[in-house]
Image (cartoon, rainbow over all chains, first blue to last red):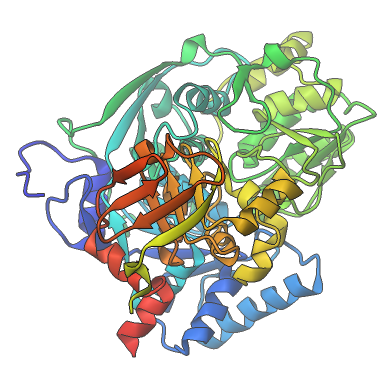
Length: 442
Length: 166
């Protein structure tokens, strides 16, 4: 691997150079990186138990550790409660200041809202959707709990430099379509392994109009094509988000890909031609236009997860549900991504709209996406705004999960069958005007 | 003797493409990290017959994108708990590949070998010579980088780390 750096570098090359201290890294090269943040969610107890088994009591850098009790929150069993207690007491004993308890929400969202994730950083997490940190221009990637434990002790882990794929998305999107639809279409086209081991860089005229929250949906779902990490170039929207998160302007280094960087592939997506999309059971890449499955009877609708339960997602759902009611045979479960999202939705009336429409609002966290609360019986169907529809993920192995946007979820909850959100919005043009735009909310 | 330097293998259990981690080990069982306990529930969504065949198997042979989905390390340790010594696939999802190495489970990409294997065949893997042997013949694969060999040789990341701290 001695290819001279005569061409420009991708974001991934620059991020790994920064995190490893090794100059001019090339795709395929394996180096040791020193991550800025080691995130562990409810799985933290596994790391602590592993550390105990190793007999090690010294941590490399406790300030890089971030723990969030999100996957099973609050505890459902005495074992969960004991796991949480172990984490809570460990954090206190070791002086880990970045600890969030069961009231905080989904780790990814909580870390970004609290200014822990910054452009240019290398972040590892015990969660495959750690690719989401690319929404702020950071290199985020998922690892197992042994690797987080090892990072606690050594501060490092091995990383292979990925090839990069550039995805250019043009806009504007038609009414009734959203970042979720863009990604489902892309996942359907490229397949569940279409970006395996790649760094997915999102650009193009549409991407540039997106809020950081909408970029999170992009970077989160890149994982469902096997991406190692994802990236959207930081801009004014990023700076505004970081300002709100209390990150000082000199607290980060923006890494931009060079114009002449080498990409394995360049993909162009024509956003203007998009229709609402749905993933059908039992793989995320099993994608069809919503009209192909419209009319499929549902038992439950779930608006939640790190993909689509941020404030703007809830606002879109509330826009569709305002003045309407969930079908009598459907359970609509709404799980805000974080306490901050929930608080804002309470302030603006979004929560009231949802409750009046018949939604069940749960505490913030992973909730039904991780199969905790809102599980299904044999033969039942859920339409979910989450990122996975694998068999048995939400209860019975004989149940089915469909994936769609918050607007598709809300429209489907009203009709009780899978519904194109445009059909519901068409009934009330004012709603279409409110929810058909993108990029308007933080 | 280093555990990774021997021939690994035996009866193969065959899977198709995109076997996800929720199928390998459902989320409801992640309250455990004990490989033997996890193994009891490995592939539970696919039914009892598959689970019985798994218990006889020493090698998992699979298509594209094996282990896609969650970062749960238990997807790898549930297999080792069931007595699986190696996974030979057309390709792996990256987190599963890392988790396999880190739990001492051999994970080899060898599409040519996979194409010849029938369920129940004897499949042997030798990571020193870089070969997979199936009833149809011998197939090569690129050797592991040194860093990964070291982890595998010690039986996983944590034992590897403990050795360097010993």
